[in-house]
Image (cartoon, rainbow, N blue to C red; front, side):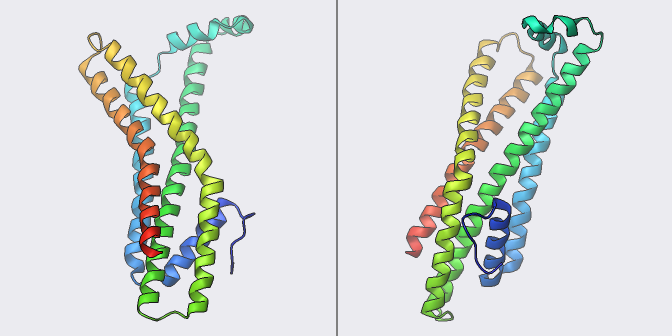
Length: 220
């Protein structure tokens, strides 16, 4: 594609941004390594979440009791495999939730990083006089389109997930310290690590957008 439009989906926009940055970048090898680092960190995050669910386990009896609190579930309660089914459904749901969240936040971080590289490459070419002023203005217009896409299409779900992760963090801290005396040390350590993971995930978008804003201010 030669130019990006506001109607393009995020995947197409991200590919367009990567292509532009690779064309302008003076060190594409470092760019590739950084992109793989983002993907690797996303997979590590997903693996840690799965490991936490596996370690803590899902109390099927507790889930079953809450399931029975709804009046329309009386017929299913007589089925002998209801507890196993609920445990499996809850595990799959948590995995899909973490997977979607990982894809959204990693895409946001990648987009912010690519836009920072875009600005840095344009600044270097302008200082070295290796780009015509008209082409530089055209590239700046493309950057503004990409930034507008980031702010209008990706930022809203990221903000929603940030609020969700902060609420998870606060509620988990309150629950953990409320039952701290009755909690085994391994469960306490795993829960604390999971809380720190939620906190990091909630704060990463703020650092990404602040670095992008700083790079934009230095360029302009």
